Image (cartoon, rainbow, N blue to C red; front, side):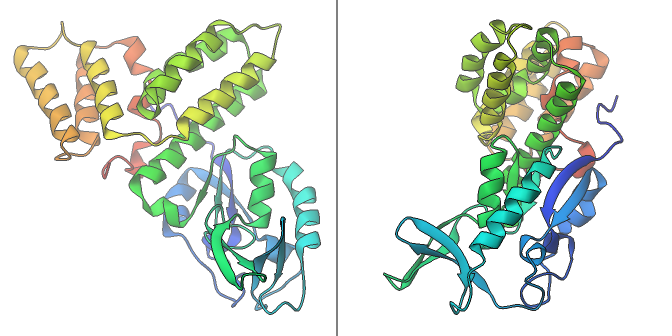
Length: 318
């Protein structure tokens, strides 16, 4: 049964990544992955902060400039400064984005970049790649749990799946939050994501357990602390070692149901994945096959087996 709703998930995105011609040179930076694949599941809400503050296109390029501890957003030739306009726009726009479950930003952009944005220092007459785009910095500050990723990093299979995992999980939490959180709901949510959390960071998953056990319907602060820990775990990329550990745990549920030949085949597939000879999809598909033959409710509800729609084919190259 497909556990994913037909309703699309609201995700913010830099307008240029959808092919809108809003860049400084009148061009775009279209992301094929976003437009042709993620758009089937995400309802993208585009924003171009530079166009929003009236810069127009084509326009002069801008860059981050550091004077002592202050970083401003200025024209590359120093002819104007739009820091105040950008900050004011962010202050108006960000309160309208609380419904989003993710955000894809344009890499290297002085307004939208998430990391390694060039910051020019007039005193040193050089630039360091240590900045964050002015708009995205305020976005990350306003919504620290929001999954945010750059278009370029989505070309990496591990980072791509990590981001999509986080968006679907965060959306599920926000939906549950909208309907009303209870201890029972959060415990069921935690149980469903057990093995996905273990794949991301087993030690931190174990640390989250006592918090779940201490939740109370009378103290809503515990729910906020839980989702903070939950999303923090998902920020860690899954390792091949952690995946194998999870696969072996799931294998244990079938030890009395499978023949010795079937057990050997599953062990071999897990080993081949560990050695990089097969993608993650292979042992997971075999586990799902055995699950259909030998139904196990607890295993069947695990988000790890299908954290996102299979049509995205994200585990083909992991």
